[in-house]
Image (cartoon, rainbow, N blue to C red; front, side, top):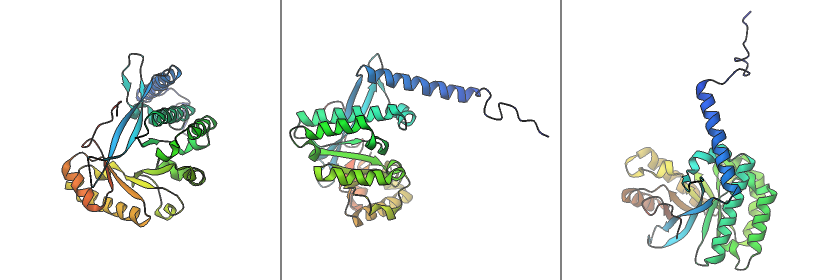
Length: 265
């Protein structure tokens, strides 16, 4: 009979790589938690331009930035995958929403989209922040767009559908982020109330020279148009790619070709 060690059963010490990863994640959690506790957060904004008039900005995406104690930006890619399913992820969503309402309240010429996890839609603190912001003067909901990723939307699709039905009468719009990259079954699209989709950047980047991306992006745009959703091509990094997605029918363009995220608008 083969003996199974405690390590084989998952009770032994982590191997060096696992230990390093666990230590890194713990450090990231501490960094983010400390930054939130003292308000070391800012919003960076990236423009989304109209495909027919690239000098016109349709709206800006607001991206949360967390700073360390020296003022350096902690890249979102470093901490969001670690915290998005935790209470800390809900707190980051609250701070992001508060930043958005603050700017909308002082700049009536702006329309802003922000990312939110479907898990936050039922969070009490996040809902309080939303209620307060929507009650402010200026009908701020008319200029707010919530971006929800495919994966997040499908994991809690009933919650998302109810929330959309509640919010859209107040002017809030919804974007399906990363369209094509996640687990959305097309048969469910008719049950949602997304106003726009953002074709995932993995299919848009280098689309002018990658035939597979061309086929997939065109199919996604056709599906979105069938459901009367506005189409944003995300991840446009060259003029050739911009021309390609415009010809396919994209209504708006987002990417480094048109502007990097900046702290000022």
